[in-house]
Image 1 (cartoon, rainbow, N blue to C red):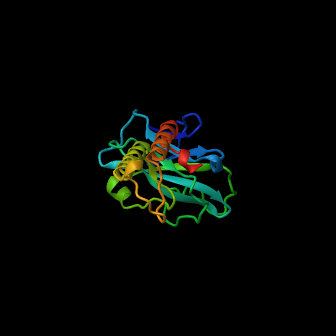
Image 2: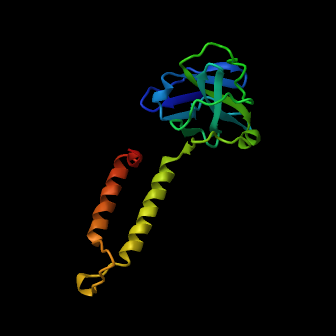
Image 3: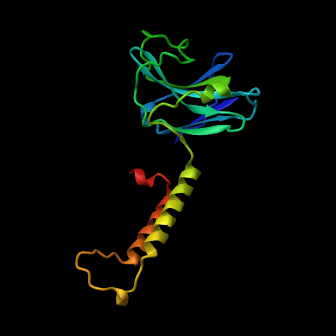
Length: 199
């Protein structure tokens, strides 16, 4: 029913069923993971009005700290979650996976993705963990491209020729060709890797 993909690794379909509505995937070496994709495999849809609340856990000496990331539904059968900004935090007092690992259990170096099948109305009330978000690369790329085009059009609307320039010692001038070169370089880098600006 569910699949999990850690960027740079093979697809995981080896979920463990905790009970009728709770499933987990083990994630090895989670400190090295930036993004995780959770998806429906297409073999079985959610029951009407239900969805999957996605949680991520960090092992700690006190037990497992579960953090809500977001959700998937029949209408939204996959989601990409950024987890690199998550910190090993306190155990959530109210999470659906507490029965899987109790406080005081020996610390495990394996993190987990938990999927809780719940009514979509209940899932909608939950707030994703701070410093994580559902990543939508196509919307991000489209927004960035539109923003840059808007900036380029605005800046170039002030373009004048050298003959039109009047001496103004307190004003700095940048040739429009510099803006052209920067814009073309940015578009090329963006087409190669939408996250290039993070490095």
